[in-house]
Length: 328
Image 1 (cartoon, one colour):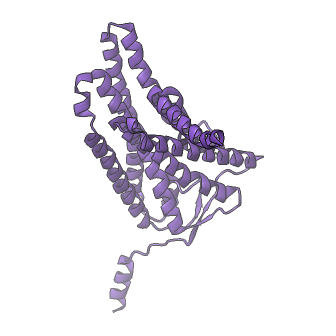
Image 2 (cartoon, one colour):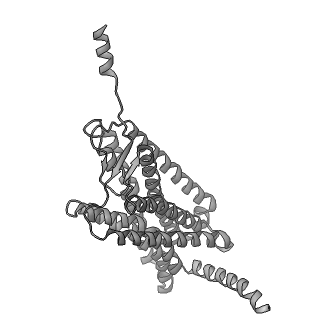
Image 3 (cartoon, rainbow, N blue to C red):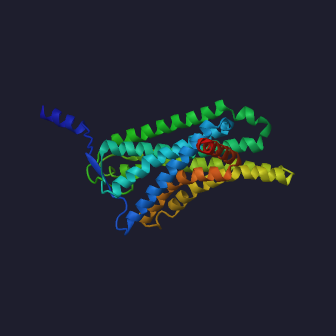
C-alpha cells in the first residue's frame, strides 16, 4: 500500500502559482519621475490624436473607403495599446505598486501583446492597400473592397486572440517555485516564463515566444519589405514624373509608420547584449508608447485626403460655435 501511495505521489504534478509577481522595472536610474511624467503626456496625446482620427473617419462619409477601415483599426489599436500599457506602467512605478497578482499579470500580458500584434498586422494591411493601388490600379476596387478589408482585419483579430490565448494557457501550466521578480516594465512573456525554468519544462513556452516574435516583428517586416520591392519596381515603369511623384507621396505616411514601429525594436534586439538592461527597457517602453502618439500626427500631416476632411470638419464645428454669437 505504501509503495502504491509513493508511486501515485511521484506521478502527481503540483503546479505552484504565486499569489503575486514583483515587476522590478527600472532600477537605479536617477530622476525617473520626469520620464513617467513624459509618458503621461505621451499617453494623453495618444488618446486625443487617435480619438480624433477615429471620429473624423466615422463622421466623414468621404473617408468610408476600404483603406480607412485599416486606418480606423490602427487608431483603435493604438489607443487600446497605450491604455493597456502606460497607465499600468505609471501606477506600478510612479506610485510604487510593483506587486501584481497572478491573474492580473496574465491579463496584462494578454492585452499589451495582442495590441502589439494588431499594430503590426494593420501595417501589413496598409502595405497591401498601397501594393494593389500602385501595382494593380485597374483591379484596385475588386481586390481592395470593404468586404476584403473587413475579412483581413477580422482574420487578424481572430489569429491574434487565438495565439495569445495559447501563450497564456502555456504559462498557466508552469510552476514558479523560486523567484517571482519579473525583470521588465510589464508582465512580458519571456521574463515571465523564464522564472519557471528551474521548476518546469519551458520548451513549449520558448517555442511560443519565438513564434510571437516572428509573427509580430519579423514576418510582417519581410512581407512589407517585399511589397515595397514590388512597388519600387512598378515606380520605375511609370514614365511621367508627376504620376511617379504622386504614387511615392501616397506611400510616405505608411513608410514612416513602418520605420517608427520596426527600426527601434530591431536595433534593440540586434545589440541586445551591448545595451544595459535599464537602457534596453527604456528604449522598448518608448517603442511601445511613442508610435500610438505619432501615428495619428503622421496621418493628419501626410495624408492630403484626411487633411481636407479634418479641415472641413473643424470649419463646421467653428461655424456652429460662432454662428449663434454672431446672430445675437
